[in-house]
Amino acid sequence: MSERRRLSRERVLEAAVSFVDREGLEALSMRKLGAELGVEAMSLYNHIPNKNALLDGMVEYVLGEMTVTRTSDSWEDRIREGYRQFRGVAKRHPNVFPLLVTRPPHFPEGVWLLERFLNIMEEAGFPPKVALHSFRILTNYTFGYSMSEIRGFALEPATGKHEFRYRVPDEYPSVQALREHLINVDHDREFEFGLDLIIEGMKQHL
Image: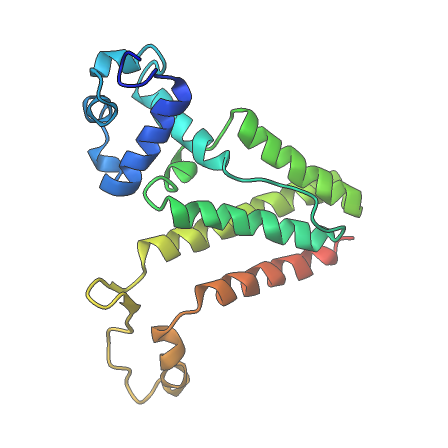
């Protein structure tokens, strides 16, 4: 088969995401992506018109990994599962995930996720505007938490641990008492705690 395997838009996006996962977003170019696929860069333009379209397509591709199935009748559980999956995208693709902040999706996958969220909220009895506000708050929370997590706030590369870098003076006993928790962060538990806080607040509007 020509072109090392027949090129397609899906295959180009898959290769771009894989390349950025490995090399970082700054390293991505059409020339390097062509080399990754074993073709000339010009061949890519038959499937992706320009680099902006490539970046948008990468956002579409990673969001396409999310599946929202009805595994529970509880709206709270369904919302939690959706945002766990969203955070999972960040953990699998930490170099691609920042694109979701700078290039919010306007393609069917992005609209479908919003539509599904609004459906869950409306079925639970929330007014449409409250549902939309809740979507924005939960999405911004997950964006922010995931970005902090994947960027490794105060991360020590040599140890892989979060280090509280400075000696805490005696006049800050409350901080001293929590030093162990500042050093060893349980991200799963902390993320779930934040989701619970938001969901409990949402219930006040039912």
